[in-house]
Length: 304
Image 1 (tube, rainbow, N blue to C red):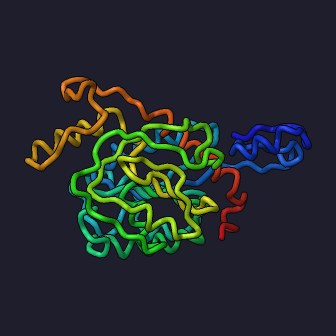
Image 2: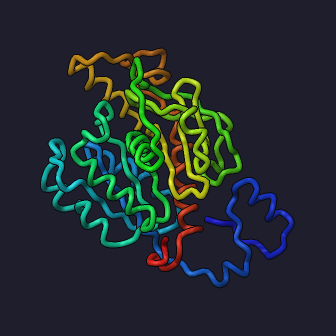
Image 3: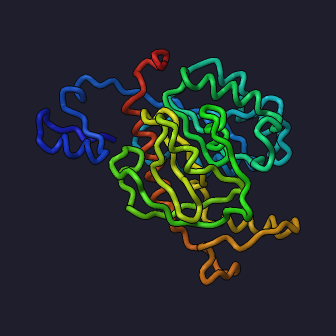
């Protein structure tokens, strides 16, 4: 939530330059408050798990957030019970009937496919086009970040020689950006992907800025200058054992997989991993909610 201070206080400008939300008292008196409407396009196969991870991250502010869950209409989900989908999810067609303050598009285990070969790609591109005038800010996660950068900016993904799998150090490029408020200069975040996007292909795009990146995992947080589009190439929302379950799953399937890097104590998969990324994950999602809260119109129909 923003700090409410007396108009004209000298510290206001300095705090704003550091990305801290400050609200002059005159604005606070006249402020209209309502819940935020956030939609989640859940493309992950184990939908209840992803729901829990994202809702945990979205619950760390005093702002009331109303959540709506959506799924592709023409894609058959094999790992989430039909009853769960029918009870809690609406289809993409229903998403397009109103405006939202925020939209989260999750990752999906389809990164080895060309974007156009994904069966719900036409539906997803329709949503991404619709979102530009009907959602105040869109938060793309992992594969969705690659999909969004490709669809909106023509930036392609590239196959890695080995899976980017583990918990990696990242550096902050713009400490004063509101999305990174409260971040340490160096922080940790999980990644789990077979493809990447290249820094050199992002830099020429004037509307995009690389806010955080890793020497090992590459670019991590990219955003449009107005923060209406946010692209996060990793999975900061992951639970403590998510990478462990993915490792055991791939071992069971006989897939080539290495131990997740910087994850197990002494690289021993029998030892319980220690979470080293939760605080920055919470900060990332909390900052995004605050950005949406500060910028979205009181009347959602005014979103353009």
